[in-house]
Image (tube, rainbow, N blue to C red; front, side, top):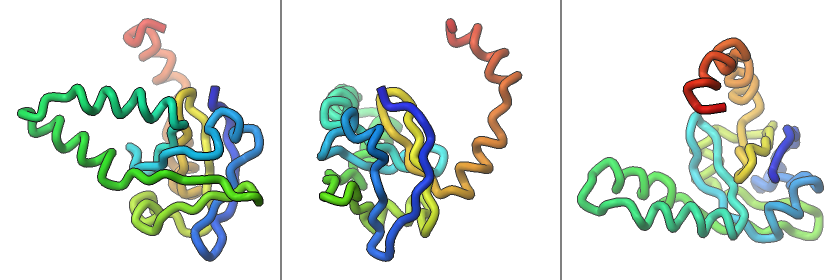
Length: 141
């Protein structure tokens, strides 16, 4: 399971270190794509297949479904961890997530989220434990 929060810097070429604790679960090759809330999503090969299967099942006749598929697939790219434990984030994805220098990788179970550090800190600050507690019942937790 992908869990935890890790801070690393992008190098001049746009490479980011994949934390050693996450490498086993994410794999040497994985998919990175645009995510929600201003971050990138990273999926292991198996989780990507599961996600892609759900995308393929969406109705082509539904405009919202087509936009959903376009959003996630248009920027998706396969990344590979090099011998130094780094992977390259393509420029279009760095721009989509406003990644410049400092990044945070967080594990959220079935995927990773890659955030610009300042954006993540703002998002994390806005998460209210009281609000989450109130919504747990609605979510069946």
